[in-house]
Image (cartoon, rainbow, N blue to C red):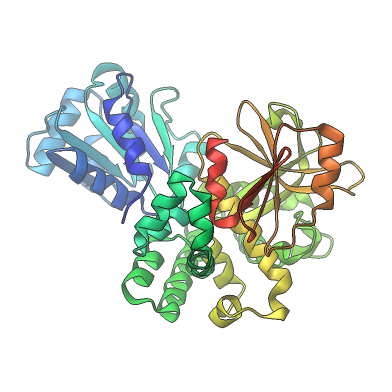
Length: 432
């Protein structure tokens, strides 16, 4: 299975200013596999240390954090010599030993020649709690579920992924049906590596659904095991409300959908916990398309998406035939799946700020508005080929953006300051 993140890791390895690397991401998005695969591809040796329930590592890091002493201990544990030039050191579940997390500071300052890469299922929570965190002494990489293009490559459609890279839209249009069929499959399967691997090998949608159910069960178990007891019921209720929130025509998150009379203050900690775990994406509202968008965010209004479109369909109980064969009763939730899909692809693009726009009266809403650091690009999402976009037109007339994007099942087309971009080519936004 190919992951784009391998290319980023190779650049990290060659960087002269390299620091120990922390990979952030939700449970089961493939962090451990990625680290081990990187070791196979780029190093002569890999030393893999899992800190979960590892008393020896707890003891090793308990006393002073002299890096020479730590390396000696790691060599004894792994029963091999650690050569800084050709050995990759992997610290998995590093949040289980906070002193190991703190040691990264000393490796950065005193022994930067070592290649150290770290991850953990709930590392995001540990980092945001300030657990011995080595501020400014580590690099970061965020890992998400497989993107649609990675899904194409994993399911034997490497040439179609390559065609998207070349942006030969005349040829792409000729094979539009293949891309649309693959996109429907991706809506159901999503990008969780275990689900994609199963689908690539067996093409069994029922097996995929069982895998997704197991993943969701594991997430719910994490709520009880790792979240503060007082917010566990709120986390579970909020998490399970997301499909119904997205099924609304106006997908703004409304606390009253969770429970009548619910207030923001009750659920702020639950939202933060799920964000820190990487299980949800919080997309804030802005009312002015000005760089940087973050400075104009309205913290009272936002949308919540889950990390993966396949998991969203599983949470909603979506049957494969409803999605793959089409169903009139499915129209409203198809919009929810499509917006979830677009959000998921945008979040996987590095250094892209993702928000949505509404005016103060609420009469104009643009599904996504993205900050590239140089430009603001409004993105209107359509689940079919209907290209009527009243809000996007209103936005254009008011702000005169350099470029607007409308993404749908329609073919690629460039008009005056407007690009019609097929949904399956949405990652082209990275190059705009």
